[in-house]
Image (cartoon, rainbow, N blue to C red; front, side, top):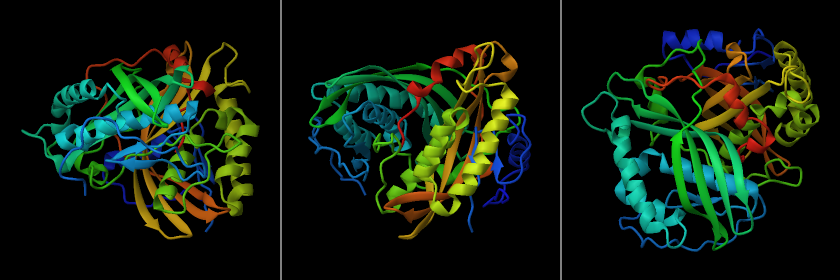
Length: 436
C-alpha cells in the first residue's frame, strides 16, 4: 500500500523537504509504513460569541461525562475534565493553547470571557491583568513584517509536546508543559516563526472541574528544525488562520486500558480521535514496547486494517530500534534515550458523515536521541497529516494516517538549540501529554 498525498505541494521548497523528511531515522521510505521526521506515520489505508462579557467570577460546571463524550466548551474554553492526573494534564494543555490563540491575543472581550471561565475563584482579576500584558507583548509576533496586525491573517498555534505532573492530589495539581508555538501572519513576506516554551500551570479542583490558579512561562528546550525541511512562504499558512482551522482539544478521558475513552458520534469526536491517533503514533512506546503498540492499535485502528497495520508497524519499530541501537527499555548501551513526541497544532475537517470522516492535522513532532552524540540530537519537523476514520464499535477508528507536504515555520530567532542530553527530561512515559 503506497503512502498517499492528498494535496498539491504549495512550493518547491516544501516539495524538497517532503522528499527528505522521510529519512530522519535513516530508513528508506516505502511500502505501507514510513518513518518520517515526525517520528512515525503509518499508512493503514483500505480502500457567534455574546456581545457582553460576564463578570470575572468563574462559573460553576457539572462533572465531566463518563461516556467518553469529551469536554465541552464555554466561551471557547474547554471545560469538564476528569478528576485525574490525565485530566489535569489536559486542562493545563488546553488553557495554555487557548491563552496562545489568535482570538485570545487580539480580542480583548473574548480574552476576558475566556479568563472568566478558566480562572479559579479569587484569581480572576490578576489573571485578566496578566493575560492583557501577554497579549500586548504578543502583538509584534502576529504582525509579521506588515505595519499592523491583520486579525484575519494571523497565525497563532500551540502544540503540547510533553506534560510532567510536578504535584497532584485531590485538591490541586501542578503541571509543567513543553510547548512549541507558531506565530505570525499570512500577509507580507515574513514566514511565521516557531518558538519553544516551558509553561508551569497550577490548577485547583473547584466546582467539579480543574481551574487555573496561576501559570508562568519561560523559554523551553530549543529543538532545531529538521535540516531537510525548508520554511514555507507566508501564504502557505492560510489554511491555519483562526477562521480556517481549530485548536486541538485534549480531554484526558481514558478507558480501563489507559487508552482514550470512546469518542462522541459527531464531527468533534472524529477530530478528537484523529488528534489522539497522531499523538499515540508519535509516542516512544510505539517503538519500544510491542505489547503497548498492539494494544494501542487494537484500541484505535479499524478492524479491517488492524492485521496489516500491526504487521507493518512491527517491522518499522524493529528497524528504528536497530538503526538507533535502542533496546526494549528505550535506551542505547551508553544510556542515551529515544525521544519521540507528536503534537497537533490545529485541525481541519475535510469530510464528515455519520459513518466516515477525514481530518487534516498540522503537526509538530520531535524525534532523536537524548545523549552525548549531538549528531542524534532531537529535531522538530512540521507536517500535515490526513487521518481517515470510520465509526465502529461505538467509537471512531482510524483506517489511514497519511502524511502530506510539510508546513514549516521559520526557526526561533537568535536562539541556539539545546544540547542533545538535555532532552531526556521530556522523554519517558510520565511526560506523555494527555490525549484528546
